[in-house]
Image (cartoon, rainbow, N blue to C red; front, top):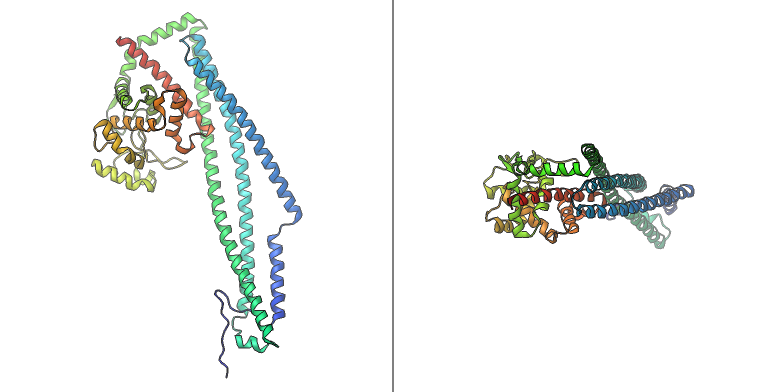
Amino acid sequence: MFKKFKVRRKIYPVFSDNRDKLFSSFFCFLIILCLLTSPSLSVFANEETDGKRAEELRKELSQKISELSEQIEKYRDTIKEIQKQSDSLEREVGLLDNQIGKFELEIRRINLIIANIQSQIEETELKIKELEQKTENEKIILGELIREIYKHDDTSVLEIVLTKDNLSDFFSELQSLENVQLGIHRSLEEIRALKEELEDKKAGLEEQKKEMMALKAIQETQKYSIGKKRSKRNNLLKETKGEEFLYQKLVQNKQTDINKIRSQLFVLQGMGGSLSFENALEIAEFASSITGVRPAFLLAVLSKESGWGANVGTGTWRVDMSPRQHSAYLTLCKKLGFDPDTMPVSKKAWYGWGGAMGPAQFIPATWLGYESRIAAATGHNPPNPWDMDDAFAASALYLTNAGAAAQTYRAEHKAYMVYLAGGNWQKSYLQFYGDQVMDLASKIQHEINLIKQSTN
């Protein structure tokens, strides 16, 4: 008796002892493939038309965004020029009017950016559906091929040879089987590639949705700022009745309140104690002497970040900090002899991880990167992110790296944007935050000037 040898391939066995049946089956599979993977001409035409419309819409939105950005830049330049003028009612009202106008344009720009992102989200969602359908189609094709092959799993080489008139027919059928197996391999690779592309698209979709939520939050902040500016303008005109001499009286009254400015206290929640404006100014001036960062600008940055330590966060490292930062955080706490579970960090927000530390709001890995330079500046080794001297020095060093020591409006604005957003510092809709810090720095500089004048 002949010994039975089964045909085995790397993945699948031989599937037929009849070449006509083989080609008939293979031909059917090709028809299935065409039906599943080839869209009709009408559908293709519709998709192409929709794609062109979406592209035209994005171009139109981008053009409008660019036009608004140019107008916002003009407002920004005007505001900078007005801030250089001597104090007067006309100056103050003009400043407020231009700031309100800039805010209004920024809100309109964000509306357009949101519309643009919404269009991208819809396009991404359609692409995801398309990829999911393609993946399902490939799985159907693959399943049909595998089921057909396993129907003939028990066919031996000898049985195939005995059914053929000559060896050339036998080898021809084997070649056909090899081609089918290559098709199966291609289908598996296609499924794998579709899966990877699908995962990338879904991740991109999540980022687009997060960005849109961030834009809406920024827009609400801008609306609130417009309300405050309008209220300030209305109150100013009400108090002065539009008269310059009444405005100058208000200015004189503020100058007599210099002692209130000096002694203004900021309770340091989570750190204990309090800090006066005058004490904060002394620390900022010390950091400035080392780094060249303007004290008023440094105070504005740290006021924006944590209110000079008044709000260092109420989160915990176990809940609110990115796991990638855990090792650096534990290393830092060990150096300082702190219990990591008792030290306050910023809470996790809807748009990402928290875990920033102290008045300067550094994340642990960044703090460790600056550790030696902070120690050299303050003499504290190891430096402590919850210590005011160390935090001010760390912030000044970071801002210096970003170019703030040039002490120009543009350099300081950019430095804070880098401090805030890192690699995203150039995003147009985030510039609003830089404007806020520069506006605050101008006010703080005015208060510093009053203090200096009173001591001369």
